[in-house]
Image 1: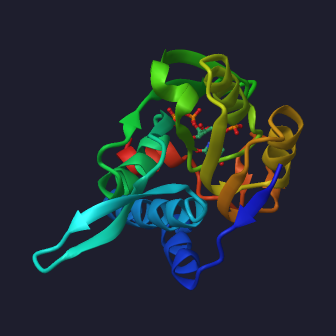
Image 2: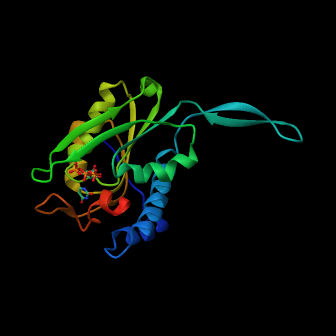
Image 3: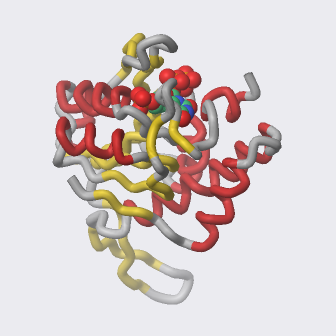
Length: 206
Ligand code: PRP
Ligand code: URA
C-alpha cells in the first residue's frame, strides 16, 4: 500500500487551524473543506481522461472529460466534512454512504448503515474520512466497498498515524492513502496524538 503525504504549505497552515483546540466549528468546517480539496487534487493527478471535441465561440478544439465515473464514499459522520469540500469540484459524482461508529469503550468499529450503488465496480472510488486512528473504521469500509464490487479505491484522510496506516496496509494493500499528516500515534483511548480531537464533534459542533 502506498501512502502519500501532501505537504503543500497551505495544507500545513489549514491543518494548524483545525488542530487548535480554540477553533470554532465554523472555522473548523471551512479549513477541513479546504484540506479535502488539496488532498483530492493530489489524489486525482493520474485520473484517466477521454479526449472530446469542444466548439469554442471561435473554432473547434479538443477538450477532456473523465474517462470513468467517480464515487465519493464518506464514512459517517466526519467523512461528510471531506465530501462538502470536494463535491463542488465534481458535482456529477455519485455519493454513496457508509455509516460506522467506533465503540467508545473498545474502539472497535460498529457498522450501522451502507448505501452503495451498482456503478461502484466501474468507478474510481474515493473513501473519505478525516481520521485514520486504529484503522478499524477505514478497513471495514474498504471491505464493504470491495464486497459491493469496487476495484479502484483511494482513501483521503487528513490526520493519520502509524497504527492506522499499518492496519490498512495489512488489510488493503491495494488502497493508496493520501493524508496531510502522519502523527505520533494513539493515546490510551485510541485517539490520535497530537491529533485534533473528535473530528465529527468538532465539524458538527456537537
Ligand atoms: C471517527 C473518525 C473515523 C474513526 C477513526 O469516527 O471519523 O471514522 O473515528 O477511528 P479508527 O481509525 O480507530 O476506526 P467516530 O467513530 O467517532 O464516528 P463519528 O464520525 O460519527 O463521530
Ligand atoms: N476519531 C477521531 O475523531 N479522532 C481521533 O483522534 C480518533 C478517532
